[in-house]
Length: 132
Length: 132
Length: 132
Image (cartoon, chains in turn brown, red, yellow):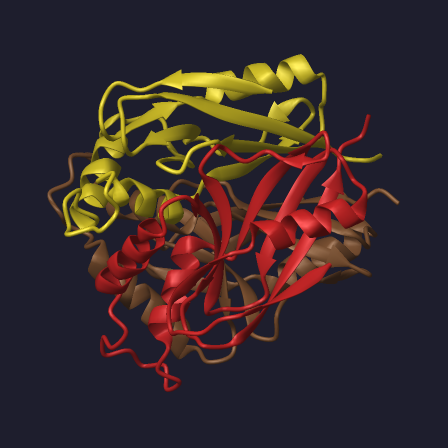
């Protein structure tokens, strides 16, 4: 199953927890592992706090300082900083599924991380069921 | 299955390989994938060397230099550096399971990474069995 | 299943997508999750662009600047920078498998990342089949 994410700025973290929950509910699977996967080399998936919006602002400003956009890169397309951030954040996350619910800690939400937007993005969700 | 980890300083890497092995043994599953998952947004899971303790000292001192604790962050709780490190290290790792044993290289151990301690933490372990 | 990778410089990204595809084809499994895993603490797995070779050059030069090789580390073996990069890039990636094909975006390739070469490396591939 896939869903789309429309981003609106160059770097952005978008909470996709509810979209992942919808895919899980539709699948009917109640126990297993849920793989959430970015189909892109300049957009990542991460899990982080979804309570105070300042957290994602801080995460993006910090990573943009550590990996500046324009740093004498050779790739002609000019978006090497985005590629590097994807390798650091990673293209996917796995969340346990138990009794039909994502096993997320109190403050954990699932995010699509845009590092070269704005763009239209695709996220693939695949659920592997536990055997009983 | 979950187990607890009690950390004792702000940043710390604690070897949890034996706890993961205990959960695997209890499950009776001998072949599949083992998902080790931090239920927190300021604590991560990683796999790294478990021979020379200087390695984890170096890993922490380096990441603490790249991502300083106090860097004009906006999040009022003041622990944004911890949140960023979790997105970089990642909240989970997957280890293959074959013939009842974790497939770990000679020097690989599984670590809980504390980035905003000391705290009491929970680690979720879920095993997906291979079909035969 | 395991395959070997021979690296030829200290830091290097080697495209292993075709080796992973070979393991998948040999398994006969057509639907599930594919876990690609480095058995080493100084070599990682990542997914990134496989079109313009300048991208991997930029990724390596950037991470080598952020994490310099010689940074007053304590680990006597002298390769702490490599250990840190593995925790940042991560030792494994998971790719969905559908209809016998890896679900990779247009530009996505699977890479072994050498951070302390040249060496001979082992990559473990494990496939978990979806139930029907």
